[in-house]
Image 1 (spheres, protein in one colour):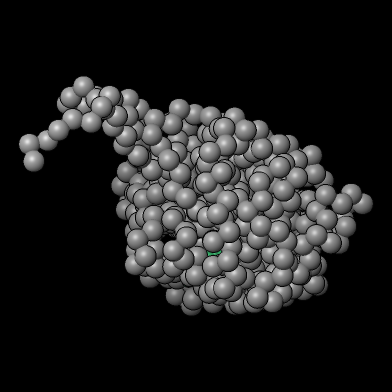
Image 2 (image 1 turned 60 degrees about the vertical axis):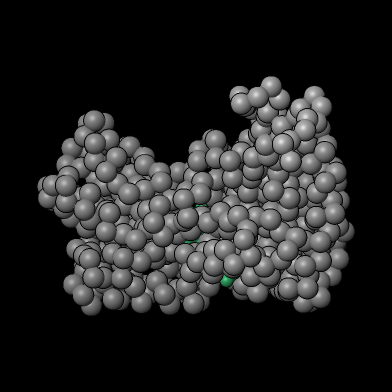
Length: 490
Ligand code: NAD
């Protein structure tokens, strides 16, 4: 597929292959990449198994030392060039993201824009101060410097494949790590090949970034491999739990960025038209397949009817269809299995007394924007991350009850509070058990400047982005220097 007539992507370089120090076929064979809207095969890439991961990790370790020794300004220059290339080739790359991940055009555009921002943030990280002078207890010189871990294994999901891969890859590379990246085999192009191409053209030394698409087996091999020092995982709590277990067993540092059931609290003084639009964006963007998606709309009882009416009207006017052939608001759900899961959660809610006010049906993988009201604890729709376009409305009668309802979730990723009183919204918001809080905005927010992550089942307390990256992707090394060695009593 050569979408725009330009050929930056250069399919012939990588078709059927993975990126080791060179593009090569994998031992585990190749995997077809399909458009989730049409099921059409759009490309084929190498699929990694345990042997392929072992090879990539060994080659990355070889390449890492020279990369870490390279001047920080030189590493920063390569990263900046990669960001330029991503932006310059956006028009060619966006259709690949649309077709591979079922993204609507604006969401695919955000992947390019934010992807470049994350790389530029990493370029800046490369040239930050990397150490401290320490005061010791004798006259020697003591200092501590931040050193790379070695080889970082990155595992990313299908939903925002480019951004969620590059946010870890670029930060890890910036501070001198090599990377073995395993994108989801359903989105290896947006989550891997595009990144391989920009770093290749930007002059990244061979071997420093290895990209091997694969499934759980390849991911587990990464967590067990002796050449991998750290694993940065973004995905489900179930996958993250397994990754954490393996990394614990093999004594690796592990960063877990997991799912969410994110509450948007709408107080009784909020503007209801604005609140409905916030709820629709938070619940329906990318078909709800976002970790920060608005999973619960908590509405004060005085305004719940007005908000519900407006949200239902919005849902009814959001068309679902193939984003590569028409102007749609919602594209396809990633798989038939996931459609079944969404339907089962909606059916469970209705069976337990929730009201289905919009959607609740699908045409193949195109799930309609859905609104459920009267959602309550005990329903799957209240408790589970749906990863589908379902707005779940829950009413509350006091700010204290809103806090209690929001904090019932085992997850703790993001929350939003809408109110014309910033003071009241902040007082409520600061009681929420989350890693990110948005006053007067819905829950889907992110950017390279922010330390992104969650509490509870949303992660293991790590953060990615902004001021967190130096802490996550390097470790301290203490160095003491005496002018000359001196004798001890022994
Ligand atoms: P998933 O856990 O099934 O897969 C994510 C990645 O992990 C894929 O590359 C997959 O191949 C790999 N994987 C799966 N099992 C593994 C195992 N046992 N060992 C090693 N690797 C394994 O997740 P998914 O359903 O594809 O993605 C959606 C989930 O990701 C949702 O829960 C969503 O909330 C979460 N997510 C979190 C963030 C965040 O930053 N917190 C961002 C996006 C998505």
